[in-house]
Length: 393
Image (cartoon, rainbow, N blue to C red; front, side):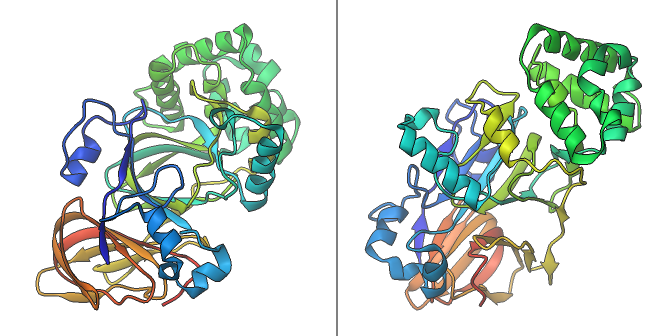
């Protein structure tokens, strides 16, 4: 058991103060979008004498036999705090085979690292647990409902060249055709986007599906004015998460976060395939190849447990997540002792004890816990524990 120090990602969409407040750290004058804890190759967390990545190269036994059999000598999960003050890119993450194939193609073609869509060969399923109110776009709305919302703006005739397949085709085929067209960046699509936003302004105060649809259009335009890919984003469901609720994001699910702060657990990958709402690398062909065009609602996940130690259930083999809400006088053994784990304390104070020693933790502290190490926690604290999904214990 050893103290870990993570790394900050200063992306333009990040909040200036949310992550510093959560971690009890100083603001650096830049937007802080993500705080990473893990052993990702390009940005591993720091332990006392080395990076966590180097530690695991020297001591792979700390991953545990079960994890090593399935994932090799690589920590399979990545724990983050994410805070969005502006919308992220319209994106999806690949599954295992898509990631392997895409990364192999990039390497074989000699694509420079900064121009690669698939920056590694791992999948990236993820789960986001809200710490504040979180607004997101997630999965495709029913095609007929989407067409009705656009039509309610009085734009049926002008948008019919793009949206027509929503009523002329059925199911995923209709959504795929319209989505691909809506990602086209040209003067005609920009004019359509401006028309939608102009009409939407008149309905933002309505307490209805149309009002929510229009608020989304206006919000996106505020941050991405004259961006034609707003049309593509408006094909998605709007989702609200209250603190403590979680959103499960399997590979292939189109999504973006609009605002809010949360804790995210994912496979140990940085693969993001973008299609719009960004100035970063966009790869429409790759996105179309991995996206699930089935209309669906949000996969909301509620925690299961006794209120002090609650797991957010998923079927992701690479990762799993517990929320810890320990009250004074209570003592808990951390679960999954057969798995490597990372504990992040977000509030209060806790004393963590194991055969390797004792660590006192407060807000913003994180601990690396090797597989096989039984850890007892007592105190008054809130936090999250990340582990390997494939390992039970």
